Each structure stands twice: as structure tokens, then as C-alpha cells.
Image (tube, rainbow, N blue to C red; front, side, top):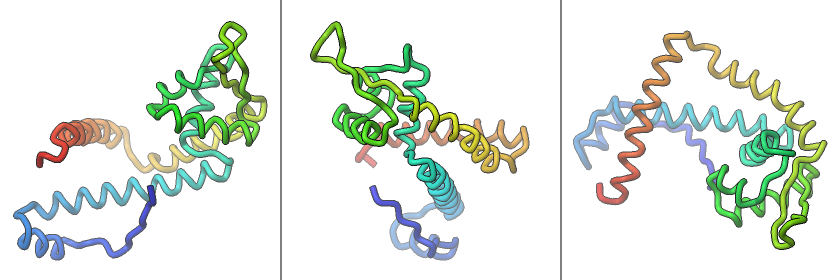
Length: 175
């Protein structure tokens, strides 16, 4: 999915004019949504740049973390797919690319010749060890401006937003 960085963001007057033409809405609600969405996208853009500087993506990082925590650092593609919440073909492409980069290796199952496991390589482990301090520093920088009370409020607010998102998912196209 392409990510657009539109800079001509609507202000309250533009939202009000649009809402009068289409539907009566609370302009502040829309502005908060747009600010939240813009903030998330900017944070994601910076975080993706950090991943990229280590030859990672969020999915590759998560797979390495799953393997790091797995018994003998090995998992079946189906297990990775389930943990990642992605389709088997998507995970297969990710694992193939990670194997080409030397982050993981494929091993045929000794018990079942039809199954193969993926194991994190020494390079994959070193990539994680090098990346993790930068990862935690990025999180500290992003959330460092918030007080303990802010973090508590953020948890509450995110729970409410997640509830609204789930309600929207259930409503689907029946809006």
C-alpha cells in the first residue's frame, strides 16, 4: 500500500464547509482524527527509516523476534504465519527474502520430509543485537515527552480508539 504524505491538511473552516455540504459533523472530532492519523503516519515513517537503516522491515523484525524466542530459534512457516497474522504466501515471500539476506536458514524436517523449518542465523541474531538498542532509543524519543499521567491517559484513549475501530470493523459497509 502506498503511503501519501499530504501537507495541505484541512483546517476547521474547511471541514465545516465540507460537513455542511455533506453531513452535519463535529469539526473538532474530524480535526482530532486527522491529527492522530497524521501523527501516526509521521511516527511510522521515521520508524520505517530506522528499520531500513538496519536492512529490516517491521515484518522481518517481528519474524526475527519470534525466532529468537522459539525453541532452538526455529519455527515452521505456518507458525510464523499464525504469529504474524499474515497469509502463508506472504510469509513465504518474507522468509525467502530473509534467507537471501542471510538472516534465516531453511531446514528440512527430519521427521517429516514435507515440512521445513526456518532458523535464525548468526547474522540474524547479530542484526537483532545491533538493532535493539536503537529500537528502544527510538521508543524513548517518541514517548519521552509524555509524563506518567500522559502514558496512563494514552492507554485509556488507545483502548477507546481500539473499541471504536472494532465497532467500525463490525459495521463494515453498513454505515
